[in-house]
Length: 253
Image 1 (tube, rainbow, N blue to C red):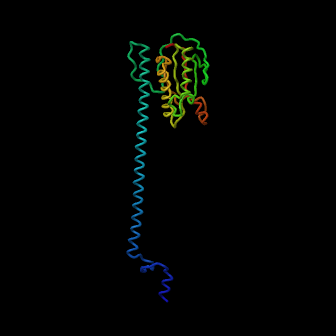
Image 2: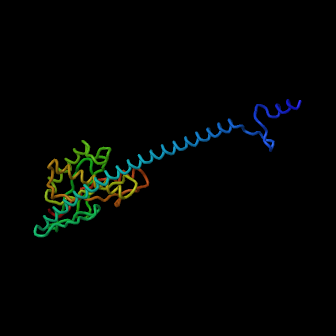
Image 3: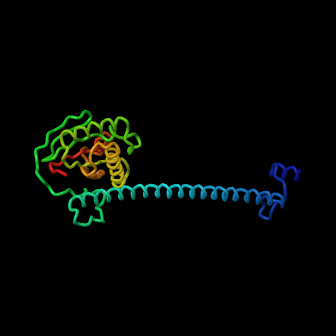
């Protein structure tokens, strides 16, 4: 009867009873538990190694992207410096060019004014034209000029730029034209500024590649998100702030 009571009390457990009256593991059971614990620890180590390798791969990819972006920015700075030096030489051939260009956000120096004149307004479909003091501003949304990547001139944009160039040739053939880019795509003002600089350079390159207007007629400027027209609280406002302005100066080049 005692044996039956023990069996009922302990159920399916087997092995000796410890001094504290609790079930005691035998050697085989202890080894199995140790093996299971070691296997779980090894799985954790393997998972940590996998996570570490994934993090290293992501870090390498981020570093590569940073290098590409840095190279593109240096190219833009170099091209703006060349344009600055060219205008400085045209302004005074006897003076050495300024070898230290301003920041990208700054305008390239404008040559000394000659005879100011009243400029006519032009009507180019797809643009908005108005006066700003003695200057004329021809404004076009960047979505009408660039492909979805934001920096390649689209087929529609090429047609529009051709029309703008034709209007400039007809009405402002002797005027200094500033290509002023405004962008509001990205997270930081630096990203906005870099994008606007690339867009201004892309338009300048297109004008020169197509031989639409003289190179020394242009000034290239990036304003980034520093001069918004509309509230940036909405997507519609941010799209409206992303624009290109062709600023026609009354000064001749």
